[in-house]
Length: 393
Image (cartoon, rainbow, N blue to C red; front, side):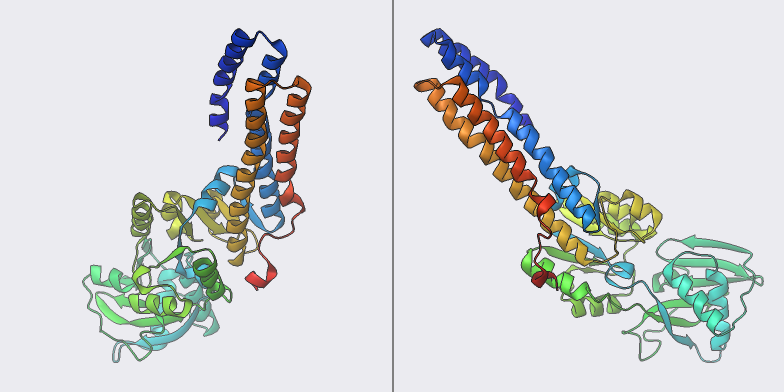
């Protein structure tokens, strides 16, 4: 918009020269030169962005720049990571399921905890907490190799131990039963193998955030956005979460590696969608980088938090509703400001060119429109909430 206004400077000068050549009226030329679209637009647009950024910060949302607000207002697709984003990220081990005649539950947990020790993944932390709660001793880990989004391979007591997803073990050519137990579809699974033999699995739960269902409802119904769910979890669990939240099953992408998450976001962008990606983990960093707008949490992984365009400082998903609403309101403010600047100046320019206009009146119109637009831009500073409480609650 500012570039368009800048391009009008030369045509205005040429118009003034033409009027001077035809009318020989310096007052009319002075009025034409007084009227311009640049000043009002250059003042009002940055003021609108500053007001909106101030408002978002006061409401617990850190938006990096005015450019981010522009992109956020244009978003038509939101892609969510599951773990720690739509879920609480407070993982609890709910089942320790050794395969009969292989090892005891305590031994299964011991091997898993020994392999996962000192890893920062939420599931690893949950396994360590469970081992501590059951007083299971942790064995020394001689060497390990962590595959992001898959699992860990470790040397424990001279044996090779694998702890990870179904895909991780299948890649190691370790066979898995179709349904380990009756809780297969309700629990997320981490499998444990030793020396090429499957020993069993650990089932864990990660409850949904209390606000997730309301967020999905508002984004789809009130804002008309298309939602996608990405997760490295098994398809059954991913579908269950999508059904609970009301996300269409066709937009669920399970067993997605970090590079696959990034590819999905990239494909959506290339198809013409304006994509916001919401995630908080190390696994999400690539997808965050490819999104038009990246959103993370203050308590998220350092790399996710530092690179995100929008940071939810109170770790509340409903703050995303506020951020999108503010972005759209800011876009509307800018459109209003353009009208406030362009319409009076354009009408006055028409009068100045055809019938003549007192330069003092032209100055008043020019300055008045710029001041009106600037004052309109300050509305975010005095408006407490763009989204009514009745909508969010």
